[in-house]
Length: 270
Image (cartoon, rainbow, N blue to C red; front, top):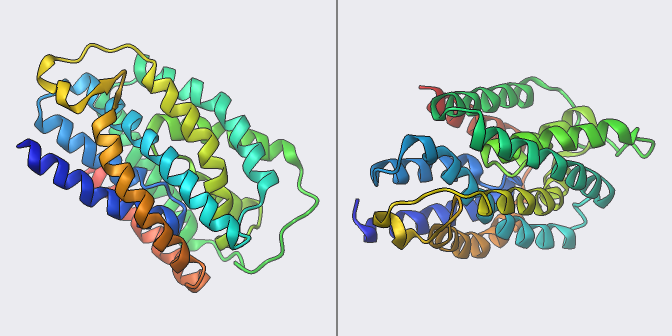
């Protein structure tokens, strides 16, 4: 694959990721990880490192984009900060566990299969749940389940490079009875914290990279060039996504969210 085509693909992905992050609070990892895996595999990078490199690079972009999108959503009053902070800092502990699992104990094929299964399960939960998206927020929440959820989100997000939003939104919507729009905003606040922790974990994990791929500027498992190419466009387009999210019907947003997860999950498994 030619260098020009690689960077053109990265820029296009950045536009899609930014819009998706702003509109759905997903972080775009479910788009970036498969795309980066495709690029790295076509370049001939070892299968032992492809998934980890895609995840590490994805998390670096998610940090930049979620920081920008969280700012946009906060202006609309869509972030429940007590949830974001609890989920975020408990999630940091989980990211250390997730990074260690990926870099030491899990094969690339199993990693890919688990990613697909997780997405399909979450899509089914969103599709069949009948929670009223306009329900009032429970102000007497037991914070222990929130902390435990954050720990689990940290593990899964650092394993699959999805920033946590894909997991946090169903948890906030289904179990904590949070309206879908505020679930999206709150997940973005959490993602800023968790994605930074996961990104740094991959950045400082040592790995040998062949000279052939030096133009991608790898530090640890993170391609700095790929991250900046995607990140620059995603920051621009995330603002448009956040504006649209605030005006879209909640039920439609929820269905669209579920369809995307199902499609990507099946693609990863097949």
